[in-house]
Structures are given as structure tokens and as C-alpha cells.
Image 1 (cartoon, rainbow, N blue to C red):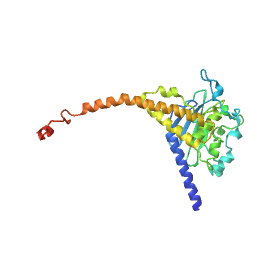
Image 2: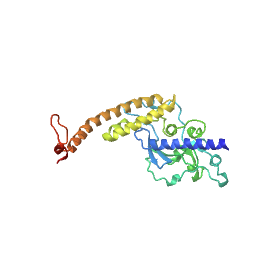
Image 3: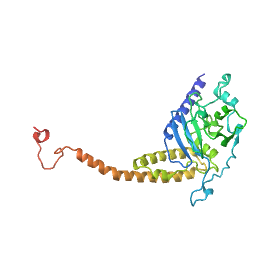
Image 4: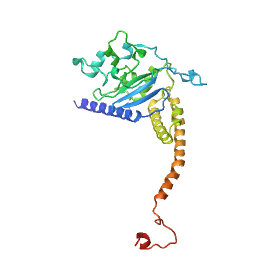
Length: 287
């Protein structure tokens, strides 16, 4: 009994750490292949581009992952958890309840571009671990020809979520796997940055946004090990760090003189110290 209690505490602690990652990462923008939308404490929406397009003057082959992409759509059994597995994991087989999201995908109100697919990443306390659901363009990813409408809300069978109980899994592990699944051909670096996005931000926003991205890329590198994208993430970290400090210097040059001028204007007349001038009570206190 004591061992089970300790295990439950450890699982809850891990889930809380994952929810903390959702809160910290959910507002960060500036990726090339996906966009995040924070929705509540337990849910994160992720919109991922469907097709990798070549950049001007850059061969597409330089951005393609060496790992073979899956041919879409996949069979339901290979991409989604079966209802039997869901009921076993949820512990609600006696009620015929699996692992549904908080709301069905048919009720999803988040607008999605035609060339993107929306996913829901959630760490519901009742499941005690994270799961991912497709929220749009289901038929592009999975063959649901002979499936019921309820099958659209089956959670995905991902390596990251399957290994949750055995390995240290972070939010960015799930994001990397989703990009590799959704984008064709799969990009070599799922976390590639859109530096133009940062450069076009107002100065104050650029300082905070690049600072947040620097933190996130550092976290990815700390836990990624020797992944295929590690080197590319390091290159992007170098570029965004350089932009961050350049923006900080620019902000200091523009803002510090203004602050000094405001301080001088707010300083009371005659209240400053002048060397060689004797100041008695009348001069200081006005009597």
C-alpha cells in the first residue's frame, strides 16, 4: 500500500511538471512549422503545417529529416489507441469509457488554416499522464473510412506518450514527434525558428520573445541528447541569442536616456546637493 501511494505521488509530481511546461511554453511563438495556443491549465493546442515548402535559394533536401516519414493516411490501429486499451488505461471499462478529450473535436472552435492540422495536447488530472488528440483534418492522417464518429476522438499512439511511465518525457518530445508525423516531408529540425517573425516585432516584445525562446531551446538541448535535430537547434539558439542581446542593447540605448530625463524632471527644485553651499534648516525644510 505504501509503495502504491509513493508511486501515485511520483506520477502526480511528474504530471504537475508537465503542466508547468505547458504554461511556460504555450505562449512562445516564432517557430517555422508549428504554432502553440495555450488553452487553460491542462490543455495546449498545436497547429502544424502539412507540407514542407522550399525556401528561396535553399534546396529542400537540406531541411528534410533522414528518418523516413510515414505514408499518410495511416491505419487507425497503427496511429490511435484502441478502445480496449483506452478502457484499461482509464480504469473505466465497466462504464465503456476510454480516454476522450474534455470536448469532442466536432466542437472545436479554434480556426485552422487549410494547410495546417490542429492537435490537442492535454495533461488531464483524471488520466494522470499526457495524451494527444487530432482536432482537424483527421482523414489526412488516419484512415477512418469505416470508423464511427467517436473514433475521431481516440488519443494518438505516440512514442512519447507511450513511454511516459518509463522515460523522462517533456512537452517538446511530443511536439517533435507530432511535427515528424504531420509535416511531409518531415523536417530535420522540428523546432526551426522564423527569425523574421522576431525581427519584425516591436522592440520591447522582441526582447521578451527572444528571451523566452532562448530559454526554451536551452531546455530542449539539455534533454534532447544526441537527436538528429540537436545540432540545428544549437545553431538556432546561437542566432536567437545574438538577436536577443542586440535587442537588449538597442532597448538600453533608447530607454535609459528617457528614464534619466524623467528622473531629472521629477527631482524637486533646490533639493539636490551642491558642493560648497552651506545649507541650514531654512534651506532644507523651508522655515
